[in-house]
Image (cartoon, rainbow, N blue to C red; front, top):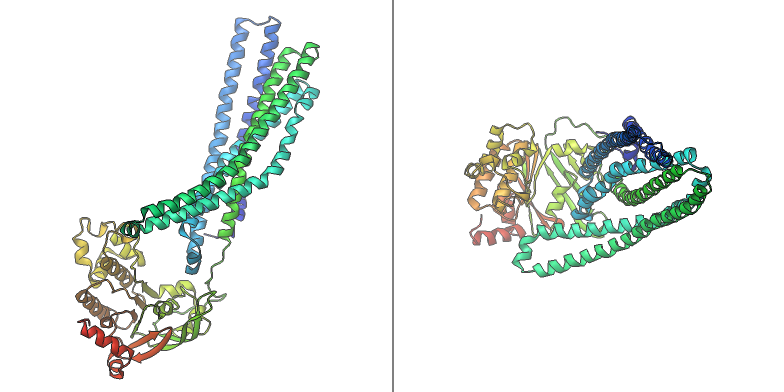
Length: 583
């Protein structure tokens, strides 16, 4: 799907692509208004015939049937236009939501560290809904109001009195001035309401995600106060918007009442003086009602469009955000990636950071070997391995795969060559079988089960009531930490990538299970590159090379035996874990 830069461009493109459908719906609504404005004209003729005592039983029946036919035809024509606009509005909503999701998929991980989930969800729900409502219901009301107003004006000019019409509509001409004055204020108020809704959605998402912590610390009252504070902010901003909206909505009936007063005074005078017939005066009052009604509708549409305008601006800011990490202008085509990894990194700082989190990190992993990385929390282990798939972007000329700078590889090629298992073992809220099969869409059930066996979780899965069809709940909440990690390892093994990264992803499994998984890895990963991060030396002791990180620097390197013989940091950790019967 071609990505269009922003919602306004998407909207223009959509309207142009659907111009014939919108044209047909507009013609249907125009036709409905041409039909409905005949109602006062027929009723005026009926009044004149009644005054002149020309009515018979047959003519009364004909007038009644004519009015009934006008109502039925209006309902059909307007209903067609309304249905088409509603369908088109939801078609645009579909495109906009899809565009938003695809855009989110393109953005770098750092973007989601800066933006809250609640705010993004508010964009996807409330902002998109506001635009849709303006495009479907708003367009229906707008077309109906404009064409009804024009049709009513035309009929009063043609069938009643030009002078009476011009005098009576003078107050109505002030309505556009109200629009110009109050429009920006309503738009700003709507934007502030949406921002307050984002704050509430953000807090609700955060609180529900941490519900175990809230209950364990008995902080329900604290969360309730925080939520109430943000609700109060919404109320304040909504009331400010409602005050402005109510002011605008009340001015339109006021102008309509003044127009009616003028119509009764001047129209009554013209009728009494015999310059217009009584039927024409009755018809004119109905036409004036028809003109005031669309003005009130236009007020509602105006409010909707102001809200949609504010939402469209917020969506534009979101969808014009460029990813921090993108493909090179001319990516290198690597062919078959073997898995050789080399890092020559003088230093690395997070975007906008003042402190280097990695310094003087250099190592080389021949294709097919295993690298172990250990170090205390915060030493830079995860940051280092995140540079390989460009979750964080390394400086040019510092990280290479098969001798190619990772920045010169297309992101799709680079990440397809790497299977990455984070410590939390994130799972999607679907079946455990689909979670394992997520890494390879074409995998068979047999391949999924074999990957689960290698990750030492198959036997537990088949004991579940629905086996591999068992739903794991949001983020895998129905599984234990060890089960989530092993399911994530199975998912990575199924991918069969040249490079496998295990980021402390055995921390929640017992020693015997860890031993089985590592033995399986050594067997099935022979000839493929594996990087294992762990706090437990038992997970890395059989690696071809081990790096010891401390405060972002490699302080030791070598094999297990070499590092133990050095008597340094690694040896002290080994002695401590051995003393604690670990390893």
